[in-house]
Length: 226
Image (cartoon, rainbow, N blue to C red):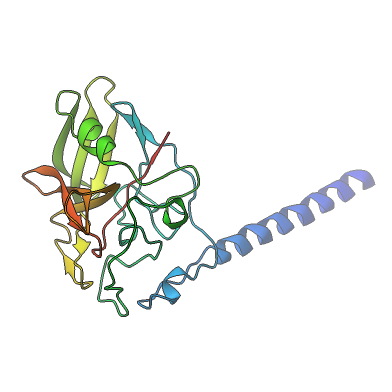
């Protein structure tokens, strides 16, 4: 009996210690996001960094938007963060911002060092959007609502796999919020044929397009993996 009591005591101590670690880690998971560009990237601890992905017409898409650099938003309908093209600075999807960078980003592609996608993921190309995701022979897309959030649902006709992109809107080249809740605007990594513009996915309740967008705007990222 003495041995049994000692075993139970040791087990209780181990359980308490484990619970303490869980509480400690939960406290550490908080992040600080402010409207200052310098403070925007201050992170106490990253949130979700993995995602199962879903294959739509041969391309594996993440099921959630990119949040702070290297992380995913918690749920498919969550907005995540906005990014200017080929930059790794995260901007909030609500409220006003200060210190918006109005200098035009440089580059002919989204450089790996500037990609805020979690490890193993990247910003999609023009072809992955226009040829694969918007292939109406193999993929349907419709305006829908997920848990109270407007957005567009893309469904692979062959497999039934679906992907939801929330209508987060975007920030204009001066940082002003536009189309929140009524439109979705997502970057590609491919430059447009007009200087200082890049291809991106845009949608509203009535249509979906892939068009050129100004480098300095802040838009969402839904990344892909090989």
